[in-house]
Length: 148
Image (tube, rainbow, N blue to C red; front, side, top):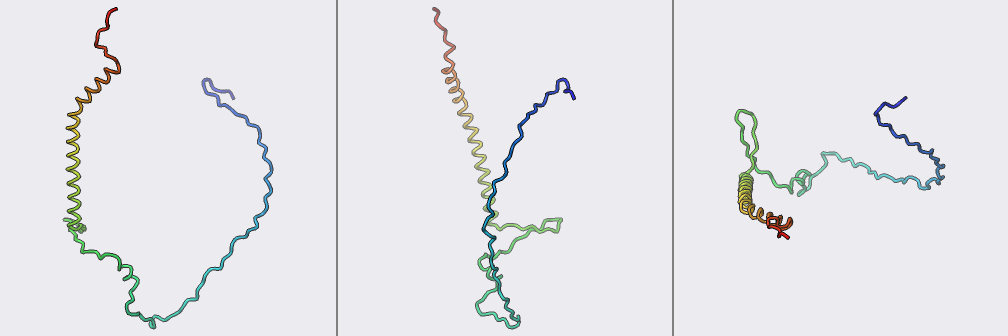
């Protein structure tokens, strides 16, 4: 088994055998698994025709629905050429969404226009400032050196 010409040789590392000692004998744990008695109850059997409802008591469904606001009538719009009716939000929600959208678009357009104007005004100032700083860092190369 020779190696091919130009093929890199794979380094082989020989490590000495590892001698592992026997494990340390540990004592068996003395704690047993905990035991518990589970609670239980004896079912009470009552015929349904003997049950009474006391005055002022509410059913579970009434108690759940008690804290929730009651939904208003949902307006639906029929989509032409389909058998689908799409729910439409209330007028207050539509007005809020439209107002928010209009304000955000107006703010974005105003900010873009303002940014473009600032770039027009400040670009010559920044360019002049950059030229002066560059001139100071590189030294004034436009002046003639005195002959001497």
